[in-house]
Amino acid sequence: PVTPAKRNFARRMRRESTEAEGRLWQELRGRRLDKIKFRRQVPVGRFVADFVCAEARLIIEIDGSQHADSPHDQERDAELKAKGFRVLRFWNDDVLKDLDAVCDTIIAYVRDEDLQPWR
Image (cartoon, rainbow, N blue to C red; front, side, top):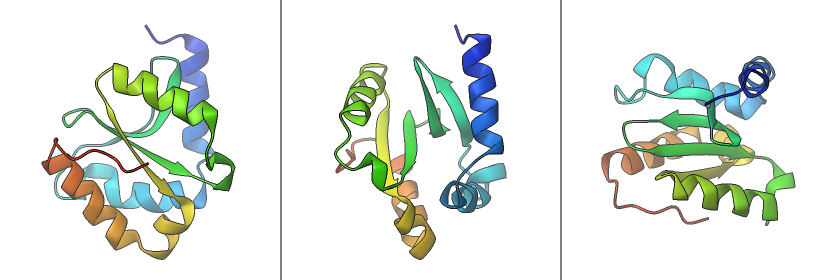
């Protein structure tokens, strides 16, 4: 069950999204990307995922440089994988500089559930 505190945190994260998250959300919202349904800032277990495609069991995380080699992210990814999700991570710069490639990668991962994230 999602606690009220976790739900409020997710709401705050929606209001305070980064530029990269906002740009990607414009592509994902309302099934704009290849008619795929995404939700943003979704509580999943102890964590709040940036974007979730429940149908493909795919979580998309948009990371700033503070996430480089983060033990917290490794622990988080392991827990989300244990819940049956694949976690696909992109750097903020990737989203801001090559949004088309990011979107193409997301479509590929949604359509082919055998693909496994590279980081």
